[in-house]
Image 1 (cartoon, rainbow, N blue to C red):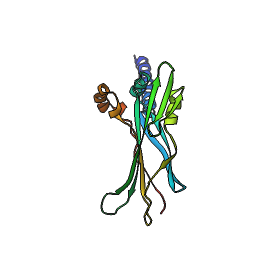
Image 2: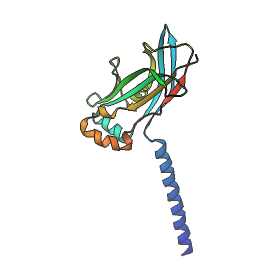
Image 3: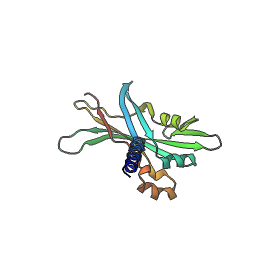
Image 4: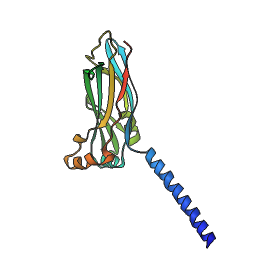
Length: 191
């Protein structure tokens, strides 16, 4: 009976280790949106925004896209004047909306920049998400520049739940897999 208990205990320990490994593996693949970097470059008196965003979609979002639901992602950029005693003064704000679609008959994923109407087609979801996350030299017209202080810049990317079809919205608001939002990415230019 003692050897049977040892074998059972060993199986339990192995099963527990496999369960913990599976949990860690799943946690590494949690859906999220992460901004790797963002920067501004001044060229011909116009600031150009460069950023790279990683979109790791949930199973629900992937299933929805593959079944013909269009996902809209917004990327919000803002410039703020820092203040010591009050909240920062907002100087400039712009939103860049993008759509991700899947065309069943053509078996292609499409990324649409709703600001410029540029449409790009891809044969895989990974390639489409990579393109969705690559923001290169987007012009920021009328970005105010002031001398004497360094403005704070922020960038945030998120799934726009209100753009989902109406029947999907209530569930999307309460399901964690639909909450795809990056942390606020902050940086500052030297004055």
